[in-house]
Structures are given as structure tokens and as C-alpha cells.
View: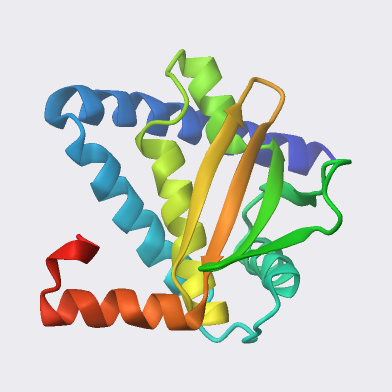
Length: 182
């Protein structure tokens, strides 16, 4: 147990440094830092999930992401959340499916609070990118992870997985230069 506490403390110190670094980058280069950190997270999500089981089921994909994180020794507790007024965990929309996730033990959030840095910045965008990359490998679809609520005890996020048709049309439009997509 002491080894786990020591490991967590070491990791937390590294995260504090990362929080300070993110703050400096955001101050130095502005909004571009969000895009840079998103792409870095997406690349990491794709690397970590390379070879993971493929599925079309969003709930199975969430479990796979959790397993991928554990396999890579990442302590990041999140779970699906179903509000009382929803009939199911997953809502199907015209362009894809969405599920709510609660992040209750997030190293990024803890580092941001300890450093005194605001949430919803470049480090949170790195996590959003991670999910996007992992979902792309696991489900073969584009996705977004939107922060619905950021608080000191937990964050509520909406994961939207675009339908394969919607994802394909989006990519085709970009390749063909369709301005309406941009």
C-alpha cells in the first residue's frame, strides 16, 4: 500500500509540473496551445489503443478505454452516468450517439487545483484528444468530449460518437474542399 501512495505522490508532483508548464504555454502562445495539446492527446489515445478490441457499442468502447488506461498504468477514474430523466445510458441522435461520463478521480483536475490553474484549458483538451484518438481506433468514428460541468469533486462530460456515415461525410467534404463543413 505504501508503494502505491509513494507512486501516486510522485505522479502528482509530475502532474503539478505539467500544470505549471501548461499555464506557461497558454500564456506564451495563447489559444493555439489548446489545439496543440488536443492533437498530442489524440496521438497518445491512438498509440495506447492500438490493437485494442474493435466494437460498435459505445459502452463497450468506454470499458475498452478504461482497460487501455489500466494497461498503460494510468490512474483515471471515470464511469458512465445516467441522469434520472434519461431512459437509457446512451442517447441516439441524428449524427451519432452520446453518453455522459463522470470523472471523479482525475489527475489533471487535481494538478490544476493544486497549481491554481483553471480547468477547461489545454490539459483538459489533451484528455479530450485522448478520447478522440482512442474512440477512432476502437469504434472507427470521430468523437467529441465536451465538458458539461467542471468542479473540484468531479467533472461531467458528454462523449458524442459520430455515426460512421457522418464521420465519412465529414472527411470526404474536407478532402473535396467543401466550405460548408469548415
